[in-house]
Amino acid sequence: MRVGISGTAHVELAAIQRFDLGILICKSCNEVIATLPTDRYVKFYGLCKNMTCIEKNKEANK
Image (cartoon, rainbow, N blue to C red; front, side, top):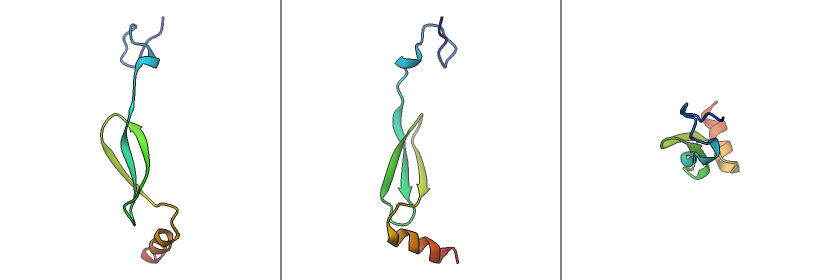
C-alpha cells in the first residue's frame, strides 16, 4: 500500500500535479530566467547570464 503526501492511502504520488507557479527573475533586467514548481505564486530574484547584468552587479557590490 502506498501512502501519498497527504497521508491518505488512496492518493498516488504520480497523480499529484505541481504547477510552475514560482518564477525566477533577473534582479538587474527583470527578464524571466526560469519557472519553478511551487505550491503557490512565488517570485525569486537572481542574475541572468547577460554580461551587462553581471557587470552592473559587480559595480553595485563594490
